Length: 536
Image (cartoon, rainbow, N blue to C red; front, side):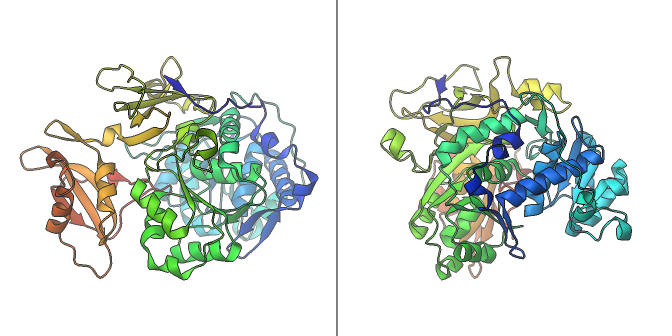
């Protein structure tokens, strides 16, 4: 077992609202909190707090409070930020819904979460209406923030919601046990499950990463990662606001708009997922923009290949960092500090690692075959094993799923991540692969992430994913799905040969399929289940 090398931090027993907004310096009140790139509207911290309180009052006047769950289905915007924190301020829990979901997916989450209200925007209204009808949410409880209003459509809009001017309610709950948010796991290895995160979970994770991220009111943070996903919710929507930074909010990712936004708003800090790193390293559009304001880029949500990260760092002359986490951990459990670790450890962490455990956390690496803990190394790297973590940011459990909860969190409080990892003598953790995604070729373990990282170094490959498929003899073999760079005529044989020259024989790619796009979740994780079919 090994602990975070960073000193423990104090975790106040307060709500998310109080942690973020109860003690705002007067000097910060008129500082810009949010800039909507769609339309250019700016929201100061004073306006944000006032609107959050007004929203909480409006929800309370409609009977929403402690014990209720409200669905929030919207892309990134200042409206999302206000509504999200208004729900929490009212004492209810927010179940944030993927903006790409179909009506069926929305209804499934609303049903499981037992949501009694759904808040959305006009662009997503058709699927929201269908889902609301399916689960029995009445028209007056389907709020369309930017809609035409209840008189015209039957659905209240933001103006209708706030018109009565009801004050924010007085709510009383225990932050350690009271549910704040209910995001759903990605479902890449099974049915999505409601992840129960308390106010203490979210407050703890903000406190754990605060000094390591080193964001300040001088920073302009690019907010393109979706707020409905726990990565964007905690690291951007919450941690950046707590630092009194300015969030430059994009509703969706588009490379040209992304680069234009950095240039126009002089963005200093970027949070991305690995697919964006591929574009930053390889796309010619990058050279047509002035990105000199950027000082830090942090990648999370999926493993970032070290060579790819280094290419981004060198091309943009920025510090590239990596972090690790999962919804069940609120989400950050491991991170490289903003300086890469230089101040604390006298050296920068290798980009192949995800840094160190955050404060107040302890880790184990456990051999999945034997259940025995892997020895901490005196030099070099430890043996591989499943990463187990324990700390105040660990979820309280899966909603209504005791079996899944007890399978994931053991009796000692360690959450079993399902990720294979190693630790080095300096306490840095290296994520090797997903335990359930390992390909077993003739008894040998083949990590898909390793092959994907190698394939991305090929100049004719812009994106890739590797899965295990069954050959004619019933043997599991590695298959690569490849997105070719436009204008190239790369063949399957060339891909196979490229990999074979650089890996052990058992790791060779044995099938290749060219596709137009690799399916990924909103947070950037490869949706391997979408690549699998009976004939794949």
